Length: 447
Ligand code: HEC
Ligand code: HEC
Ligand code: HEC
Ligand code: HEC
Ligand code: HEC
Image 1 (cartoon, rainbow, N blue to C red):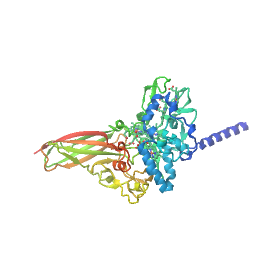
Image 2: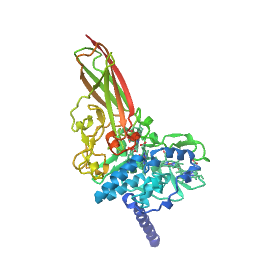
Image 3: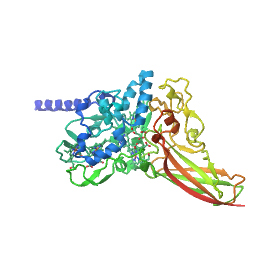
Image 4: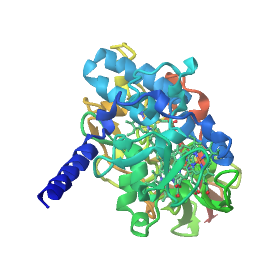
């Protein structure tokens, strides 16, 4: 009996020790080899649709995409050369953008043009070898990777000629995505918090994980030889899909009074409702992204006027109204230009309302270098199912003609503020203006 007990206790200890030993996050650097992971092409022949979907998603380009390459090699890696304390954090970029390279200890990985295995980015094997996590909440690639013949997924009892399968409930959970979609930087600042935003919002309460909007299920075959059933589509569509961004915020606008005399003042109200995103908008790379509201009036003669937004008076509001100011001076450090004066902060019409959260460098100046962010400013983004109201008070110009005056409100989105994109020679598609929504209204002007 004693012996059995001893063996039992030993086994418990061994399991405990073993599970504690499985490295995750920072500790997993260099603990694996590339050869332990299969290439995505090995999955293609059977998982045809999923493979093709993945090649069109940003997941397959997380390391090779032009802007990622520019920010990583021209800013982050250079910054770590100037300030070696940043080396671990900058190696850590790869923990999410090319996890196999990180696990294989291949950091700094070769440039994308060298066509190394780092180019596989967030591959099939990166996700389907995850067996658990180290912390709660999940952040900074804290997943446990166990590559091998066994592939893990969200369905029990599947049979495959190429590999074994195992069901793990984490594959249906938002925290699975949180391992890479939440990020804490070297200053302890949450520079990415999509899953945490989701957690605080209405969708987590209602049991609607990321998957329902980014990996929707449809009738099909997950592998060529499989039964037809509901299959998770590997779309991962987000900021790089204008159709996903478009319509995510709904707009409506009305005047306080429909009829005005020519010397009066118009008051317009615009409602902005986040009806479709499970997190704040913008989310993710918040340091890069802006969304702004542009309102114009057009009189009977076709003359156009631009209406600046009314100030509300909250702390930090100056960062949410487009201004003619310089920022991003810290780019001068990796660029080794101590006299760098910065570039335009917003690059959108002065007076427009911007929905954003500013990131500040240690000098308190706005930065897009998330690893160099020491504090965050006012969070003026639109939360899931939140409605914000903006007011535009506009004294009619003296020469306004009588008749109909029409108004148009446009909400636009940009992945990367244009002055930064231009300065760093990031291809134009990264700073293209993506229309989110618009609304129109009118008033009548009398003599
Ligand atoms: C020779 C064909 C074939 C190849 C090659 C193949 N698979 Fe599969 N795989 C299948 C079949 C069949 C299923 C079961 C599908 C079903 O019944 O719905 C499956 C199921 C899966 C599942 C679902 C597991 C679950 O429990 O939910 C995952 C994940 C998976 N494969 C990953 C991969 C990855 C990653 C690769 C490449 C490294 C790969 N497969 C290569 C045939 C293949
Ligand atoms: C191993 C890390 C990792 C995991 C796990 C992960 N992602 Fe991502 N995801 C990334 C990276 C890195 C990018 C950024 C790609 C880029 O633009 O460079 C990204 C981008 C995205 C995008 C934006 C695409 C675009 O068009 O800009 C969406 C949407 C997304 N992921 C959804 C998910 C969902 C849903 C899950 C969970 C089922 C998930 N991700 C799990 C690393 C991960
Ligand atoms: C960012 C992580 C991620 C990447 C990359 C990824 N998958 Fe998946 N995959 C998942 C998750 C999560 C599920 C479960 C989704 C669900 O059930 O809601 C899944 C489900 C599957 C399934 C089962 C689908 C079903 O519903 O029957 C297969 C098969 C599969 N993946 C294969 C692949 C292959 C092949 C690739 C590469 C071409 C790939 N996956 C890339 C996260 C990923
Ligand atoms: C109710 C649907 C819904 C849910 C749930 C949801 N999303 Fe989204 N997501 C969207 C929509 C719509 C967009 C496009 C608008 C935008 O960019 O925010 C989006 C955009 C994104 C983007 C790109 C954001 C950007 O501006 O770069 C990422 C990354 C993303 N989602 C990840 C996630 C993750 C991770 C989860 C779970 C923690 C999640 N989403 C849950 C609907 C959803
Ligand atoms: C914890 C995981 C994680 C770490 C660490 C991380 N990233 Fe990311 N990164 C992501 C995810 C997820 C996205 C996509 C967010 C979105 O779509 O808004 C992203 C987006 C980006 C983008 C914008 C891509 C685009 O196309 O708009 C760039 C550039 C980038 N990361 C560079 C870096 C650099 C450089 C580092 C290191 C200093 C780094 N990342 C560290 C997860 C991470």
